[in-house]
Length: 93
Image 1 (cartoon, rainbow, N blue to C red):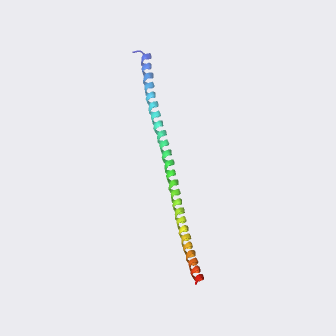
Image 2: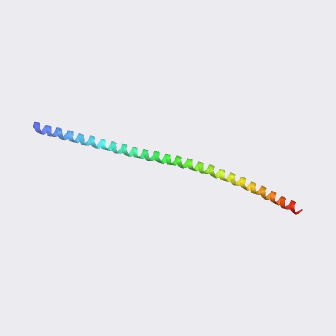
Image 3: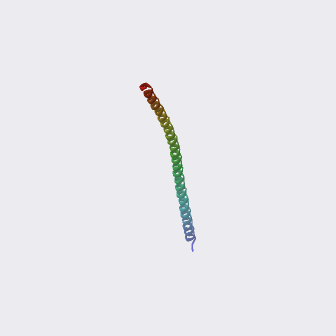
């Protein structure tokens, strides 16, 4: 085996090693990018869930407020009706 053949084998060996290292580096890069993408998407989904939960809480509080206001209006209308009926009874006597 001559010195040129030995150098060629050595260069081929370095080429194979470089190819494997490049492949592994690209694999790690791809997995890292995919993980970062999933992390970003999960964070966005979690934030959207928190926003929706806050909106539901606000709408529930608003619904309770409306129900309370309607109950007060109903009570006021019943009182007015009672007063009108008493006025009519008193006026017809």
